Length: 168
Image (cartoon, rainbow, N blue to C red; front, side, top):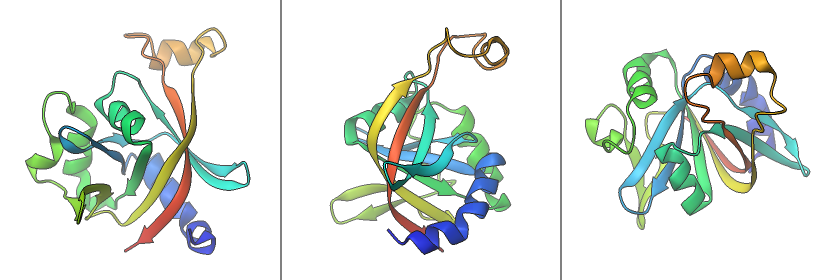
């Protein structure tokens, strides 16, 4: 992974993430590519490796793919893809293959789909290193009330070692 390229673009990646212009994607063994819009995550240095930590609820279809493959991508978009970002943030992969709608395209390789999205401005590929569950008894009550009040679907924090970055 090109560390200088990663650091040079981290501000833009963070801004896209903060504005909800990022899609966490992976591949499901049965249905192919899947993903979901995200606005939370961490860029950092963990175990002396550049790392992205994503928050995914275990009931999400994308979680299933990440758990199976051990890999994911974070795809960063500009403001021109708001329709795809809204769709990927509201429709469940359990209900339909989101990529079949045609808003965005999963890239293909010789052996099938990757988790990279063709229209993304930047893509980081990550390999899962570890994960841990948010513990509700430790979480501040205000966060529980704001983010988990309806379903108590506490996120799993998935640590991904950044293995590649592509800037287009």
